[in-house]
Image (cartoon, rainbow, N blue to C red):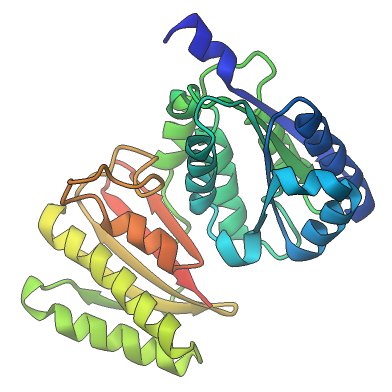
Length: 299
């Protein structure tokens, strides 16, 4: 990596306490960027978007506002949002402020935010011409969670690839005892689609969401059939207000970035996880030595 590339990217933690402190922090960070001719992107929830926009005044014209509840409930999508924003301003320095931790995040989603932040400290984004601030509400995180978030933003700028890989290798929490499980048979994928569709309809999802979830599950199951090794298993259950599906096989996904960036044009493979990330509220992928688990959530 060139010395120039090492200076392009800056990634830091910005703790805050409460709504008003966030608005002041975000408006100040983004306004300073506008004065330095650095367009900005703000990723947070709608009430905060509104109040930061008001605080910025005319400077808001140089900021892209992304509603995390609409465009990025799945933390894996935030990597793509930042990648696309940098690409849209090729040749220019830009700023980003993400507010991924909020009171509506479930424990699984917070675990994915932690992995997301570790990935933002790897060489995959070191050539982004981006000053990225990651804000954390100290009123929402407990002591251990806050420590983990701060650890993912080392002040010495060290490469977090090993940390991200270790996080990715950790198995997901066990399924609940009442999860329905089925062996995956390549000859009968239509039965799996039918089971998922019935469960999604019964959970009250809209027709579009039902179709999207069935499509996402089908992509992951098909990937398992094509690339997994040995027996594969499909599981389905409800957790809180979400419908959850998991596909497990003995194959191995070794890249923690799988599904977070669009596959290159012309490539016919690698789109399954990318599509699933766009169709589900949360996608968890883990690759321990025992195989690969992909867990899909929708509500």
